[in-house]
Length: 255
Image (tube, rainbow, N blue to C red):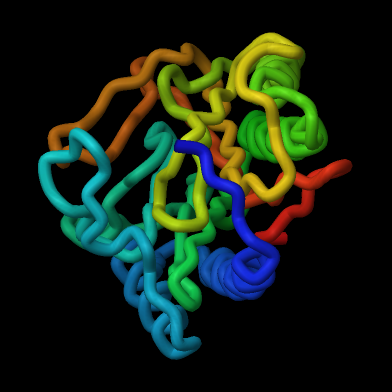
């Protein structure tokens, strides 16, 4: 069921979104060659709890998952698209890697979700293009999320930008509603047709999160039950914001 958040809840989501933005910026600033993904996870949990909030991914079990997610943040490197587990078999970041940092927090009972992809040290031109295009695709999707419009408007904008730049869209991976839980209705696909799908109503809160791949859009799941990688082993980037649908332009809650 798609939910409409109250003015009081929206105010709390703004607070939580701002806190999550600070955490993500801090984690991104730590990224350098030689850093362990386990260190990023430990710092994500520490700084979140010190602020009085909770990491929303830790011990969360999505529909169909074989077990609860065991970490506070998802860290996905290079060909890993989303949901990489940072603390079970920690990886050491290397010069030239690209790293997606995806995190959610619970602030006063309400959930926000955001992600950023950053380079480790110096990255090549192709990686820079991938990161730039994916972030732009997210912003184009957000711009299309206007009250009275449709879910399809968001996906159409994201898809058009991926195709313009020659990137694949990760198949079957999409955005979602958020606020009362990590994942809520509606699904927010990264492809679509303008004017198609659910009407966007003021008070809806959704996470828009394109994932662009250098090669094919096909994906496969690893045996850990969470990590998705590109089927061809090429790199992927991921950006995400939690946004509020209004009567006009959307509001980014995790800016």
